[in-house]
Image (cartoon, rainbow, N blue to C red; front, side, top):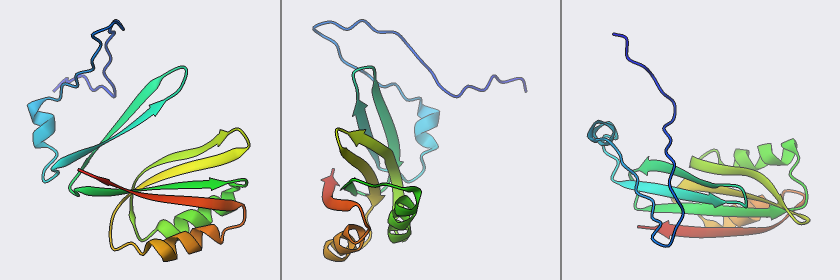
Length: 138
């Protein structure tokens, strides 16, 4: 079997007034998703690119956590992930610097989340001053 393996696919498209983006997914790809019933689509926009991450998931709800801080040392990042280790992390944005603020977004498959306890534990990490928890529903 001399099948050529690829990691990505690409195409060029003109941007005009009727611009739309259609995503073609092969039938064999859909069949390989087993018991996943939804797609979580995360969009990132910058001046230089648009980026879409697509995650097949079973849940009808996803939890998005946005953490704001002034210090995201590797030690603080490890503390955050120690708190979140009991959750199924779907995606993390990594750490981004916006003006004088450091922001990180984390998407979780929800289990029983006690928002008050989660917020308290993360805010106790030095350098973090704000936490937003948002439910994303189908």
